Image (cartoon, rainbow, N blue to C red; front, side):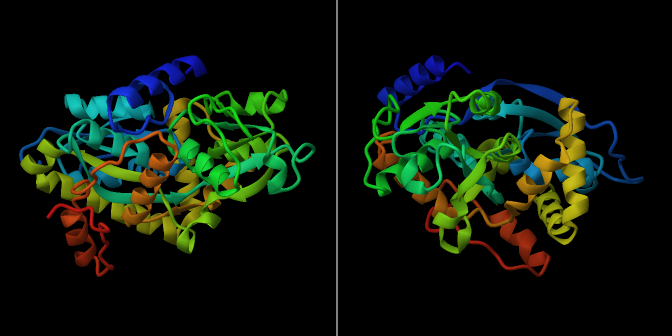
Amino acid sequence: MPATTAFRRSLAVIATLPLLTLAACGYGSTAHKDDTAKVAAGAKKIDGLGSVRIGYFGNLTHGTALVARQQGIFQKELGATKADYALFNAGPSEIEALNSGSIDIGWIGPSPAVNGYTKSNGKSLKIIGGSASGGVKLVVNPKKITSLKDVKGKKIATPQLGNTQDVAFLNWIAEQGWTVDAQSGKGDVSVVRTDNKVTPDAFANGSIDGAWVPEPTASKLVAEGGKVLLDESSLWPDKKFVITNIIVRQSFLKEHPKAVEAVLKASVEANKWINANPDQAQAAANKQLADDSGKALPTKVLDPAWKSIRFTDDPLAATLDTEAQHAVKARLLKQPDLKGIYDLTILNKVLKAEGASTVDAAGLGTS
């Protein structure tokens, strides 16, 4: 997405709605049907549904969905109800697909989830589970920047005005005592909003001096000679912060709770397998990326990127609220009412059945 387009969209959003600008790498999605996962003999449809439509991004931070699809875990839990898929590269298109009924459940970042919830006055979606934490780094050109104080006066990229990484970087800048106009990105640091797809090229040609970006973009920059100056996880308690959630259309949750439970069972099973078999899980995620995009990640990018992401069923609700407050502080978001954005009832049911610890909505759950 051109920077000017993102800028205009963000201005319009901020002027009319109390919501976060969505993370985006361009709009659109690609529908996929899973023709490889086999339905077990004698399996029955859940709630009589012919299919459940699942959305996710082709990012390693959506590794739970990548692995669950590649390993056939979604289809196993859904029985004779077909697992269909839609691949997205931007939050806005996935929220639009959810609202229109084109998908039922999706893996998505915190900013689009907050945006979709607040824009609909709490009526469009619920966050029903966690998926991943971490996987965001400040990578710089070591010839130009050797310490955190050297960031002042430099050109640093973020994916988009108001997206999750942009808000985090603006908050970090403020904590250094520096000032930047959030809208223009001008100030003590030049914040350059750049599509993740072109950030590595911008870094290589010297158009930017560094970037605050998610994986695998961060590791792509390292492969171009960059150095990790800061891992965002170091800024959070217990080094945990939400990067990917699971959301569901509220009407689907109400009408088909058994199908939602099946998808959450698949997610919990996938995360358990990922954490027990990290090397195999990494390979499975990369295989799904290759199936979806036609190109797998090289080992020098895949290995460090995968290791920086923590897969968890916990939605880390308190950190989502903190991220929203950072956006408010940056004047990119009016004070939101996030009460009720979470419904963790089914997830906690699944976790209890697995003998695992339940998770908390940090006061933002459904009463």
